[in-house]
Every structure is written in C-alpha cells, then in structure tokens.
Length: 193
Image 1 (spheres, helix red, strand yellow):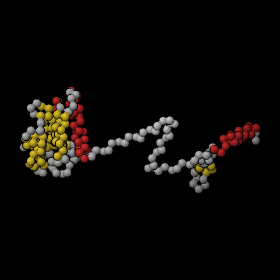
Image 2 (spheres, one colour):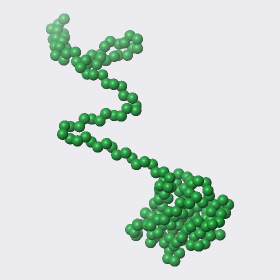
Image 3 (cartoon, helix red, strand yellow):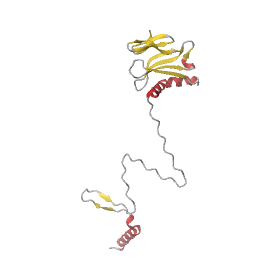
Image 4 (cartoon, one colour):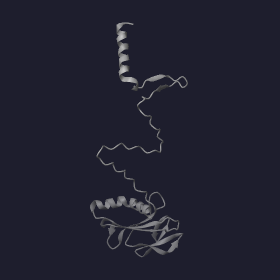
C-alpha cells in the first residue's frame, strides 16, 4: 500500500470512528429480493405506520402561545326549501346584477314554492321588484320556474304584480292567475288562456 492509499484509508477510518454507528450504512444486497436495505440509526425510534384514515398530527406550538384554533368546517349542503330557493337565486343572478348596474337599489324578490304538477317537487312562482325590471301599471318581471333539474328552468317569463295559483287544472298542471288573468301550461310554457 502506498503512502497515499494509507492516508485515504486512515482518513476514512477516523471519520467512521468520529461519526460512530449513528450513520446509516447500506447493507449488502438482500439475497432473496435483490433489493438494497438501509439500516435505521439506533437512536431514532421507528414511526408507527399511518393508515389513510388517521388524521395528521398537528405540529407542537411554541411555548407560551395558545394552540391554533381548529379549522372552520364548511357549511352543510343546502336541503329542502333552502336548496330550491338557492336554485331560484342562481337563475336570477345575472338579471339582478345587470339591473343593479344602472340602479344600485336592492331587488325585492318574492318566491312562492308550489307543487303545480303534484310530482313532489315544488315549482317557484317568482316576482322580481326592481326599478329596472318593472313596467308602470303592469308590474315587474315574473317567472314560473321548474326546479326538478340541477338548475332552474323557466316555464314562463312574465310581467305582473300578482302571480298566484288558480283553482283549476289543465293536463295535470295547476293553472295560474297573473294580475287576475288565467294562465295555462301549453307546450311547456305558461300562456294566457
């Protein structure tokens, strides 16, 4: 062995002696699997395996500081009449926003949920009262909305002051009265009688 080889070997031996056994050393290839195994340093405890459902462990808080508040849970999904009213408001959103563009006054919205065809899901009778959506002596924008789908669908784009259910029925759908005039569903749309 030359003096250069001796110095390199001595340096490696000193480095291992100083670092001690805490440095993980790769072991020879595992004869059965052909993979290389790595030893864990003896002073590091082995972590318990985490399951996909176990919650993450929060980091410790610095001394003297209160723990962080828990995260705010999202609101529960809307159900029942609240979900139906949300569909109505989503249907009206663009129209109301356009009306407010020239007149910042808030719209007054009347929503009456009534099952017009007895299918178990109510339809919405809606009147939107806003200066930009009303006609003098006639009334304001009004809708009959089908709420059975993912979004509301219009069964009638109307203008009136009063929109109410009549005592009569046509082809399984209840008739309506708009400003006292009877409206019937014909070809999927409410029209005058």
